[in-house]
Image 1 (cartoon, rainbow, N blue to C red):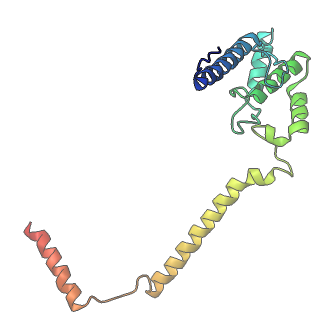
Image 2 (cartoon, rainbow, N blue to C red):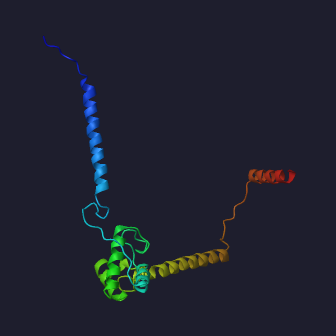
Image 3 (tube, rainbow, N blue to C red):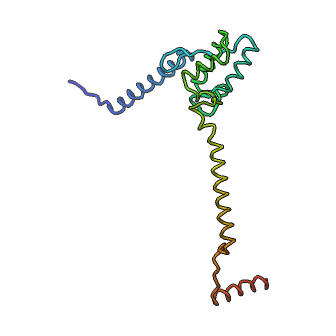
Length: 186
């Protein structure tokens, strides 16, 4: 005679699911601990940022980096930025200083590759004249508007048209007198 034992199938399937989830979590934790931190998401080796051996050259490089705009942060110098792109540019600049290139040569390379925008203080050229002249043009426009408004106001005052003359009605005069008298009584 055969006997059948009843097994709670829902309990065993839940256990199996939790076992799989636990195994996957353990796998990902082990993977993150075993993968070297010097490899980025694409599997490319990340270069370490090392200061130049010559302290004077390192100081020159750091001073120069303050004048180079971070392409990610956009309004921050690469010397201060934590972005990966800024780190890569710092490494590139240090390499070029170590190879004996001048600041002008490095700037020419960066401008050729990224445009004048990479410089915190772009040079005055046919491409950047509007950028440099815009504050002065806006200031002149504001002065012109103020001058024209004052001229118009002086002309209206001279004609006696500064403010329209309106008379209060009898009811408005009484109400104004009541308000003024209330202020005197308190």
